[in-house]
Length: 230
Image 1 (tube, rainbow, N blue to C red):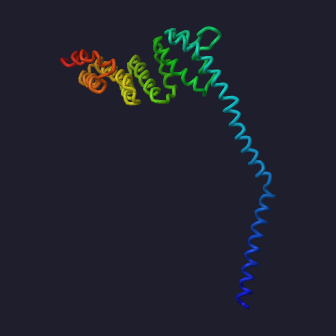
Image 2 (image 1 turned 30 degrees about the vertical axis):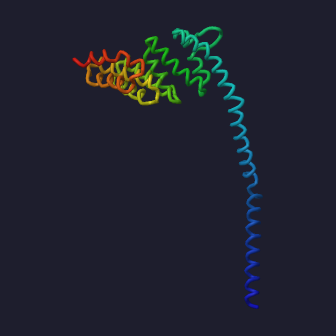
């Protein structure tokens, strides 16, 4: 009989605990319903803002930027670098305006690369360096191209250690054999220009051994011969 009373007491205590917890939870929600409601609204607005940004702002803006840039790319391919930068014609804007007007888009990022190469070809090496450093590459080819062009710019600025470092990065950045051979040969030529014939010879020999099928290996023997006797 005593055991039955004890079990009933425990059951009653458990029921009381459950009721108290329920009441406390309900009391918390009632007391803090404005905060809970506010958090819910904030999450809805945040999600809505993100979807608006992606679908109604970023997407159309990206498309517009790419459409605006095609004329500048056309002038770039014609080696009309000054026109490509500022006035490609036909009512379209140049690379510099794409960068200024469409910041944060893929088009503006790509325009940094085009601007860097354009300024390099125009002999304005400091500007070329600034724009190329602003370019954020992706994929397998993009990093190779960035490091390679940085090496070209820095060699023009007589920043030889930086140029060599970036050529090495270009060689190792991707798995494109043609580009790797190209920049390996350029690295050898830079070594040779600076009187480092041993490293120049090593670079040329790597072109021959590692990339024998690349177009840059066809005449590499004359480069090897030229530095071998020095």
